[in-house]
Length: 201
Image (cartoon, rainbow, N blue to C red):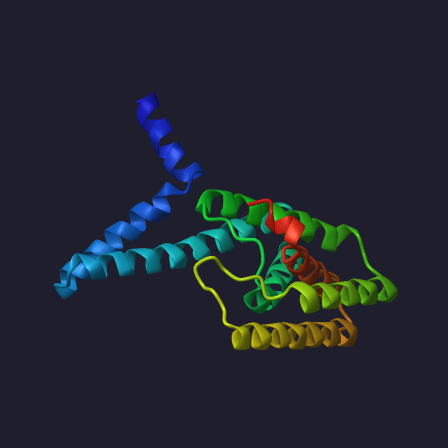
């Protein structure tokens, strides 16, 4: 009984249940559509990404609720993702490591957003710092998605445009929670584009 319980806990802790659920669903779709095994693997990897993203979002949300930082952690996450989509950054091949790193990062920055309030001068300095990082180092390519020169240029300027939009939002809002959380979100997105941080993987 203890061995069986330990096995289930291992599936949860290592997030292997994501692969199991993805495989079961992919096999069901392939069987229902009477397609080849090649299609099953396409469904499998697509579902892994979808379920993995949902799992990370739920973990972040639950952590935010437990630590009473849900607004901060959600806004930090959204601003981070909006910039990260085009600036790129640190990427782990191992889903377990990626999930725990993501959860830890957003939890720490969510706590910072709640308890360490930034004034306008500090916020502006942080944005200038991130502008510099994005201009010099972005975009950081995903290992499975190399970019040509045209795409790199486009991604860089889109990232800078998004950063500008977030800075304007930070300055126009009357909410300290929103301004603080957005700033910590873009700070995290900027830091993971640095070459020294990318050597962590």
